[in-house]
Length: 438
Ligand code: ARG
Ligand code: ZN
Ligand code: CA
Picture 1 (cartoon, rainbow, N blue to C red):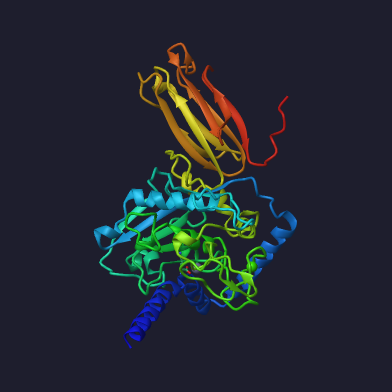
Picture 2: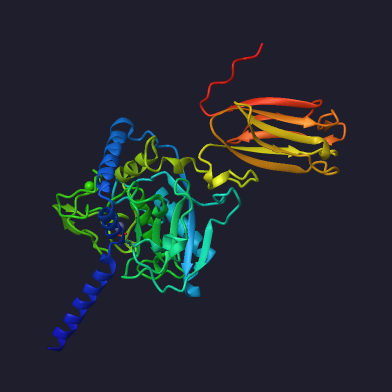
């Protein structure tokens, strides 16, 4: 009799654990989106066609190129424990990088299709206004918990607005209700304002405030997988239902805990895959097929292509329209002043002769001081003109002044000694160079 009660209790406990992990935030969120917008189904089909085309034509076209995605973490907290530390946030970035680059310490050779996705993540260093940032926003809320209705993504409903989703992966950390560990928005589904991933505070990062068995940062790995178009490894259905990835074994249902060796659909389930529902400690791989599926999004025409050229992890400048918002060419100007900064002015003009930016005069007696500016410029050709009101340039009578404009680390225009003024032309992007002047 007693044994039976004990057995019932054990079964009940196992059952509860199931309920805890089974809540699939992401699929539930998708169903909500679909109910409001019948075109989502069609758009997802089109994305599937794009993926297939990518796989046929250029399969690994982008392989060998590491893609780095700027991330902004929005911490929404009620208790101080929910206001996760910078270190905890860094640990989550570390886990994402290890898992996606396959430098995780638990990587092993059990599945030969395990892959380094060549996708990385960086905490944003430039905000949407071009200013320096820690890549972290923090907001107190009196709300105890949030649902999968995206309220945490809008300041108007007590949350935090997304940074431009074409340049940043937005990651909201907050207390979710209904035992949901996290949820993500698939590419091309909901509106841009809600694009990103949400992770439960106690399943966020490695160690610290994260609690077992979801304390190794793998909820974010799983959710970012969805954000990059990966489906659950069992295809959210029976054996016939696919995850659209050919090198993941078919499976009929989620696995929980660490069901190593479990078989379904006549093959061993890949319970170690980040897209199963195993505990964090049990997961350790993405496959090569999942890698291709994710990377197809970054090819031309892909839903996440703009992220690959985001300036969100570049260096901040004073240009205003630079940095995170820049999906064009970031050009940095450095002017080293001579003794008479008050004589120096400059302008940057586009093809049509319109002034894009200008600066100076500066103050005198700052010889050697560097003035920096950063611009976000569309493809095209530009004229940079520097003037010296006295007519003796910025070098080398009264100090060693100079100027230099760089794009992607290489100089596009530079100079030092000139008379009253000098103009240098440079072109950005695939635009043909200007006709030579004779
Ligand atoms: N259930 C969640 C979802 O479907 C996340 C599962 C994360 N699993 C983990 N071991 N951390 O989006
Ligand atoms: Zn999921
Ligand atoms: Ca499969």
